[in-house]
Length: 380
Image (tube, rainbow, N blue to C red):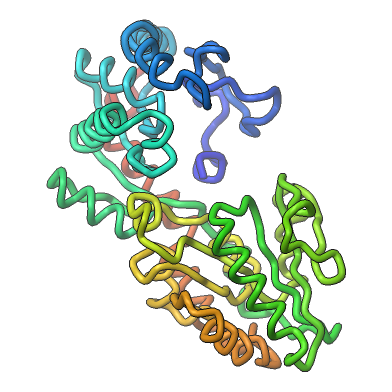
């Protein structure tokens, strides 16, 4: 999302501060300079000694990182600042910005009291991170967030409105191409899954339904996997009708998705982790729309992606936890001879209304201009 929104920004005026060390070349964006307040690898709370490591990060690393951020701002003299309060970037940003009056734009991507964070760091720390992130969001000059439910939640908790929903966007060329997607002629039903499987139990449930109905469909069905992870070792994986393609560059992935018939976007079917399920939004849903694919959405009725799929007729939307009921929905939907044509208008409308990259970029740039630390034309 950051790379896409800043693609037109002059590289000689783009500076990056982070507490995460990216592999060489992984950032994928030309920069004038980069400053890293890196957390030592052995101190990062991954699995072991999380509470003790988190204590050290809060009390020793955070004050140092906050000073590092302030020095970076003095060194680079930015004209405008965009922050993304996420994970361990939150404490030093909150500490630094509480000590220095500065305009900035804030983008909220995830809530830090999601289940996996609570399990790793405990309730007390995650609640502090949530409070600090909400303070950063409320104090921002302008702000946005990753889903409509998240925007509503933050508005209710902070009283501050958002400029827009900001997520991965669909570019003008992709929007124009949505109306010209023709019907496939190879006689198969290809379902794509892009990225990491975040809800393995739901994915296994979906595969079991597909296995049940494959013999009832008029055309052969395959599952196509695109992403970093291999799932060949999973008990549900069947190489007879499942294919792995690895992690493809963006242009190649887009072309590969256009060769499929459907995209699959699962979320949890229970509300056990509502802070993730209700407020985060899977990027794969947007990737499918950009490729003109109808989407098979499976999840809890209150999940952000199901609410989006229910608001726009973009494909099959299932919330049932009953295997027979899901199989019935899939048989009916996958028997459609030309799903791209059936859902074309809904896909176009959703893409244009919710994920227009040019409009998102223009709104973000207007926010960044409002956050300018110097008058237009002045030397920073």
